[in-house]
Image (cartoon, rainbow, N blue to C red; front, side, top):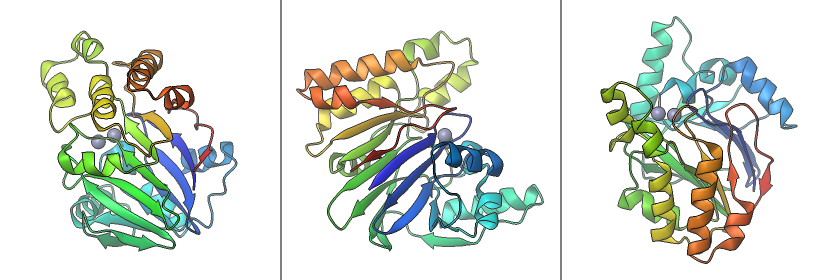
Length: 264
Ligand SMILES: [Zn+2]
Ligand SMILES: [Zn+2]
């Protein structure tokens, strides 16, 4: 399996995955043109993609979804809750909604040789999910962003992954000192908001995913986080649980440039 986080953060999210004979995107939160450009920067062709998996309907995950899917004839996968809201959003903006292949949350489905499992997460949208993608060989990628906390369901899915794209949204101290209005701070830090650096570290320290070989921190806030701070805190956590190997290859996904692709 090959993975490349094309963009990550509150201004747009998209990740490219190739495996089990299929090529897909998780989320399409950049404009169609920006997404094409980002794929080209990563040396990837925008045509011939088999699927776009949607996590939830926030603009930073679906901004280019309808245009990109239509232009490049890609099937869009979402659960009923998310599909319904995206359709409504498109109609309000007088744009043609994409055709959805609708799945049920928690029910694994096949996409070529990949088994996709939509994992329910807590976030302030209709029916948000994270994903695990498993190849028949057993290689498993987890994509967990936009979750307020790590539920038991999410923890069980996380613990089985070999590679993880994991939200490390904000430093709680920087968030509190950000000068943002209190309701916004409460939303971000709350149970339906975003995972903090502390929460991401705590998840790793508690779960100690035994098969994990690659970790990418994702969806970092530009104002309330610092990639160096998030990286250092996670590296310390990984060393403390005896995973120097993970600390050494730890990556932090960026808003404006794709991460170097890695293979599982
Ligand atoms: Zn969101
Ligand atoms: Zn988001």
